[in-house]
Length: 337
Length: 259
Image (cartoon, rainbow over all chains, first blue to last red; front, side, top):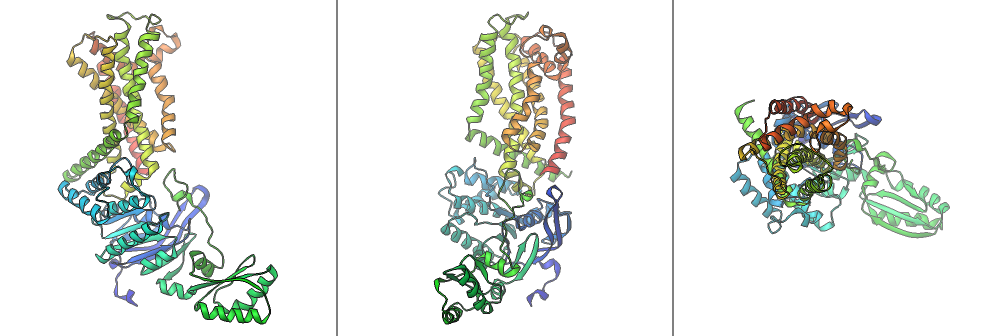
């Protein structure tokens, strides 16, 4: 275990028993979350809407005070040493909070000055970042002409103006097209190479798998699993085998026949039965043999990569519910978890 | 407060103010309408109601009575933009991003009120021009004119801190604007801005004759027209400072809790 090599303050982010409750509606957004983020890598916070990911980031970014529990960022207490924390972090998110009335350059300049950098330094840094994120040509245009992907890149650039050693990225690619997502992933990987620690929240297993060295899975404010993406996938199985039967009756019989091929329970939805398996083709062949031997008719068979839903099904025995805990969101936002 | 943190607090406020001014220039629609509205008031009261329906007993007639009042009304309406601007920034999530930066917390409020003061100054200059175009001929001289402008801008600036409170509690920008109406309408219309208080029913005169907007209007009008100011100048300044001392701490406390 590499973890024994670290002492507590060596973690970029460390929190113990974080609870956040909202008296309104009696919501428990976070229910005793403890985690340690090692330096210089991407740490993933995976979970569906309403699982408490954004609340966690907002607490660590000193935007929100926890109801109880202790959290430190770069060794500084997020409540008692909030200003010190703010000097060491960068925050970018799902809702690119750049100013639409300004140009890209002006946005970076403003954030740089608010990071208390000297004017000459900010000018150079803004130009540098626009280049780094492929925004040089658009740098002096109003943000109204920017695409979603460009805004998100600018948002990330803005979070980097002050060269923070620790970066919080709250669902940075949600709602982006595949190409923009790839670009942003590349940019994040480039940052980690320079020694930056990234705490990333995401709804996408694929994203966590690609970027995160370690991750925790949150559900309803609690950590329900943690480990490396490989460990999680091993627990989960790497592939989903989906069988479509001819009738509900057949589906029930078929599900019983193949139940022991997976470590986690089969998911039956109408005539479709899904199980997560470690070795797709071999298990598929075995499933087919058994079903064929009982002369049950199949309408379809498919193997696919597991989705976040599969992770949840495997970990909790039920599907991820789309509970929207709106209390954590800034005013006027309806769809933030 | 240490000198360096005071220096950065000023830097942060100026950065925020500059950003607000840039946004104002980039999206001039709001500024255009902010100027159009008082122009409508000038035309309406100068030519529709002021054609003889309203009688005042001052040199130069009603236009000389009206324009100083309209200028006061315009700056008060202008201070409402503090509520709208803050509500917008909250709604967009910009203030959230700012909260994760090592800035002086007050800078969001001071930056906003400073840029709204500058916005008010721009509008004031335009409406002054309009006033002269429709026959306003003040006899108080340019220095008194500047002094009068400073008095009303100071009052509007202090009111801004109160409207900032509304911006913080309103669910969105539209609501913020609507919430200011029940305050600014009685204050500006039940006052000596458009008509002499003595023409109002006696039950209204007690309020209309003594409320701060009337005091500011009297001071501004006397300075501009070159008539005796009396105690209105000091009473206006006292109101401004009083409003600031009461409302600013409330707003700052609310800002610390709400954001």
